[in-house]
Length: 138
Image (cartoon, rainbow, N blue to C red; front, side, top):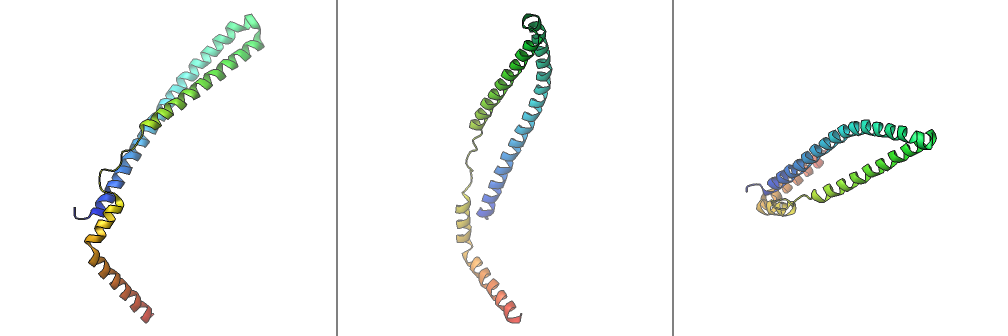
């Protein structure tokens, strides 16, 4: 464990990239599945509405049959949205990210500072001397 801060940063970046890749894959699969299902559902709904309209037209008249078909479409749309909401909530509960396995970033920074304290102080002195030199010449 030569550079604990760098290792902790690497672990955080790797974990975040893994989470983002899984999320992107899930969203792409969701979009494809919803698109295909929407095409099939659209055809099926069209057939069902036409059948309902044709069946009700002789019984209740053409205008009332159109209203009944529209009502059936609205009920079906509400049911689909309600089911999608349930699925989204279930996925949100399952998508809990585990905590990182490595050291915490703050702990790693403190450890790195403690291990390289004199080098950091020497670098700060050198930077201060360089700035003073530049101001004096400037």
